[in-house]
Image 1 (cartoon, helix red, strand yellow):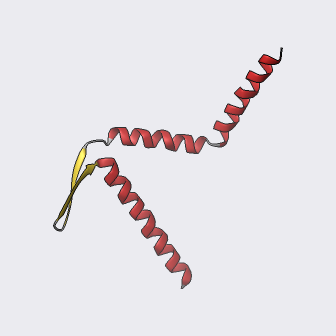
Image 2 (cartoon, rainbow, N blue to C red):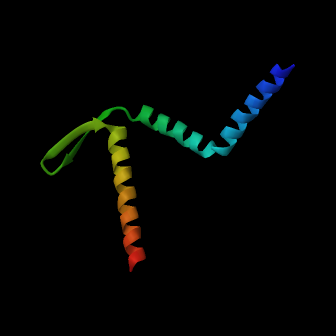
Image 3 (cartoon, one colour):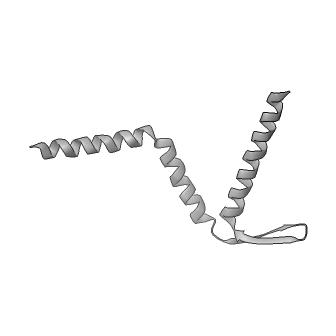
Length: 80
């Protein structure tokens, strides 16, 4: 008789976990889809350097650089 109670508790725990973190779960799923669709190699030319990497790596690196520059810009504006 204790067996059905334990399964319902674990079901409630899984449901509450997903309910509390649904945004993170959606972002992980979208990131997996993004990587799956952008696996082809691209060449990036900057001055005399050419780098060949998967498209998702290049886009992720540009996103990180943009986020860092935005954070630096914001911190400089707060100091003034």
